[in-house]
Image (cartoon, rainbow, N blue to C red; front, side, top):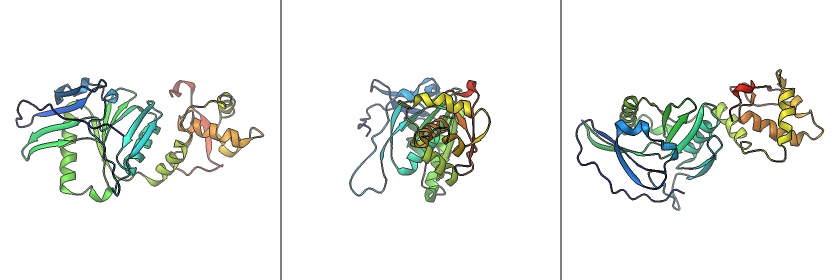
Length: 256
């Protein structure tokens, strides 16, 4: 789990509408900068800004997740947060993820406030998404709405996107959760990739593709791996079945 972070830096003074970003760089050095400078920082390379607690009897389920999109181990605070890590890791537009990336420290008409966003996302085009994950039962609470408004306003000033999310779409999650088990690099079966992609130049049923070898139990994990990495495309909105049709992505789009 993430190490404990000791906060020693504080703004010289707060002023209305001022916002600061408190973070720890890759060398574990504590940093405090005006929010106007945050767009120049690669937060995907920084350390988590706070410790994720873990103790007997806690209601959350913290843990760690290896993200294939950026080859990094990320700590999560809850099972719901882990779901969104996996969904973002599957997203072909995501280049890097960071958890608990920094602390926002500001002042507005309601007084001083701080917030640690859950996830920082760097997209392949360089743009940024900041994500907060909340229990759906908490989304309508005043303090949660206020937190979202403050964070969204900060992101607008930085040219970032912001979302506060609850439970993901059940069908999307079921598909991503299944394919997630096949995200790791191929080793002994890597030689099956080219034959499988060659057979899928036109849409083909997954079951037919699996059966191109006499040992389909070897081919199937490779096919799922290619689906996770978007080398094989399919209808993400429908359940995975052997009759699901898959097809090879254009070579220029195989980025992972």
